[in-house]
Length: 251
Image 1 (cartoon, rainbow, N blue to C red):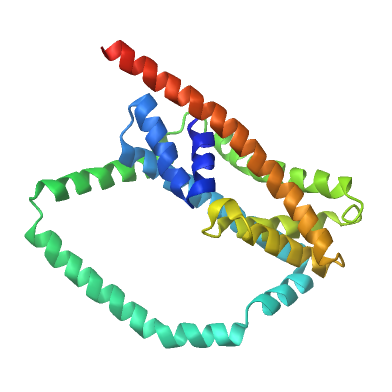
Image 2 (cartoon, rainbow, N blue to C red):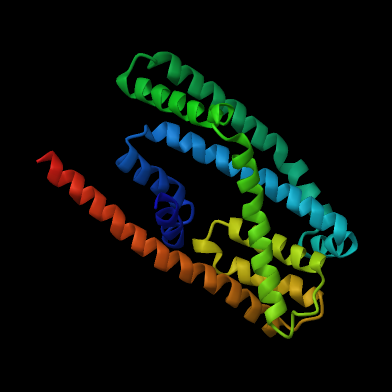
């Protein structure tokens, strides 16, 4: 229930779903908000790790095309020049900010607000290290991997179902999934626009027209959005019902 409400919130405000999911669990399960956010950070860290592994696998299988696409998207020379030019400014800003925060925390360390902040971050760390206390570690890791396997199979079955993409190889579909995942990570509502653009871009590299690429992206993305909207609204109704029942019992 919390997961689907979180996905629904992401369609409205980017990354709001992470906070919304924690809020739902805090309301229904009574867990501290900081601890819940820590588990979300842990989950997102593992997602990022698996995404990097998937990108590396796609790079290995489609290395020549991957390098060509990367060079088309980003000018590596200009990117390196920008990083080298801005690095001293960024490092200086970080150092000055760290010194400022140190003296502020030193002066107001006994304030009630900072005590609440410290307590919140302690709970967050507890949530993050909760991976060490899993009742079923194998189930956790296998399910984390299977999420990406199922995502790939969804891409594969849709590709097989459309004549223009039916001839794509398994590694090509994997590369399409990688580009789509990068599009979903972008800070926009539900990856709208960025997902379509990147998926169409990679499919054009495999010989499809821009229109065919966008049609494929729309089918994949729309099916996800429709599922999230239906399931999210249903679970949101359950959430309001549970809260109403708790409120009536408290009276």
